[in-house]
Image 1 (cartoon, one colour):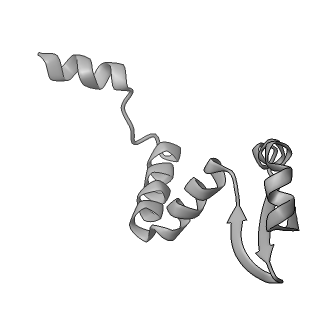
Image 2 (cartoon, helix red, strand yellow; image 1 turned 120 degrees about the vertical axis):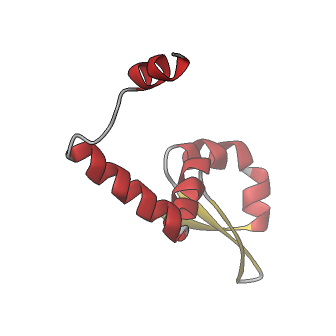
Amino acid sequence: MDKIIGVSEARSHLPFILKNIAGGMRYIITQRSHVKAVLISPEEIESLEVAADRDLLDDLRAAQTDIRKGRYEKARSYFTRKKR
């Protein structure tokens, strides 16, 4: 859910806003009726960055397919084998 607030309200309620952002809310900060910033959680920005990176997204989809088809090796057995 998005909430639109002015700069002065953001300043005076920052601790409350940060708590709400951690809970999934987004804040759109305006100044003189113009959008100046959007406050979102670190997890949400990470998701947006992954979605914007086509190569990474393709790699993640390929990895999911490999896992579903059983084409993977557990880390312990991989690293045990590599030591020999």
